[in-house]
Amino acid sequence: MITITPNLDQLKRAKTLYDFGILDNSITQGDGSAAGAIAEICFFDYFKDIGKDIIHAKHYDYDFILTNKKIEVKAMRVNTVPRLLHHCNLSSHNLRQKCDYYCFISVMNDFTKVFINGYISKKDFFDNAVLHLEGETENNFTYKCDTMTMTISQLKQLNHE
Image (cartoon, helix red, strand yellow):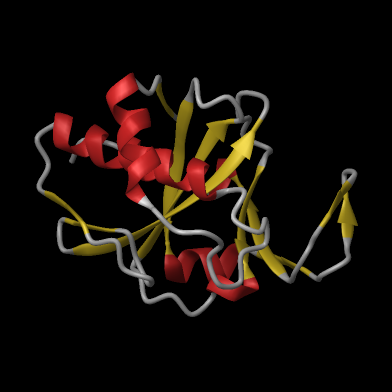
């Protein structure tokens, strides 16, 4: 897991990254947009800083192109440091996105830390994820829509290759 402390420039860029209201099919009614924006900014900057050629595509189906692969960043707000048993979620509304990989990122509710938890190919995600149906409850959490999940421990860790 890679831990990033967003700086003021990153927070400002995230604030202007998505100047819109509520996304279509937004489970949180737009409440997660800021977390998604800071996750994307930190992901982009991380790879730029290590010298990788990365394109911020801002496409509905994927967020980035990195080493000719389409990467979709999935951000989740958290109030604790992520642990290996925590879930990475993909709502049923996003199952048809045309990406090669998902990268799951946790963002502290106060935006003081961003955690790049890991990545997985779209195929491996669908082969290994568990489907939770809308209304299902697990560990005091009720799923708001059909959701595919897996744990952070099932993700691959980023390396600099």
